[in-house]
Image (cartoon, rainbow, N blue to C red):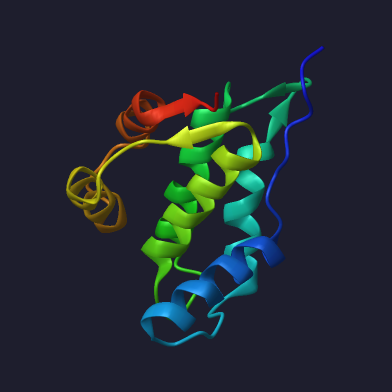
Amino acid sequence: MIPAIRFLTAEDICRLHALAIEDQGGDNRLRDRGQLDSAIAMPRQQVSGQYLHSDIPSMAAAYAFYICGNHPFMDWNKRAGVAAMIAFLADNSRVFQATADDAEPVILSLAAGTLDKSIFTEWVREHARPIG
C-alpha cells in the first residue's frame, strides 16, 4: 500500500516562516495570501487523477520553486521556500542532503528566476533520500 502524501498547509508555511524570522530577524508580514495559496496548491495539482508532479522530490521542488517565485512574504521568501521543501520531504519520509555551500547558489538562482524548474527538480531529486 502506498502511504498517503502529507501536503503542507498555508499555516504550516507561515509557521516555518515565523521560525526563520524569530531566529534571524526580518519582516514577518504576509505580503499576499493569494500568492501563498497559489504556491502551495501547485504540488498537489492533478489532471485525470494523476499528480502533475510525479514524485515526492518533484513535489518538494514545487514548494520551493513557487514560494520563491511568488514572493508571498515581505521578507525571507527563499528561506520559507527551502524550509517548505525540506519539511515536505521529512513529512513524507525523505531527508534532504546538501550542504549550505552547495545549496546557496542553486537557491539564489532559483529566486532570481534564472534556474529552470526542471533542472531545479532534478537537483532536488538528487539530494532527497529515503529516511532509514
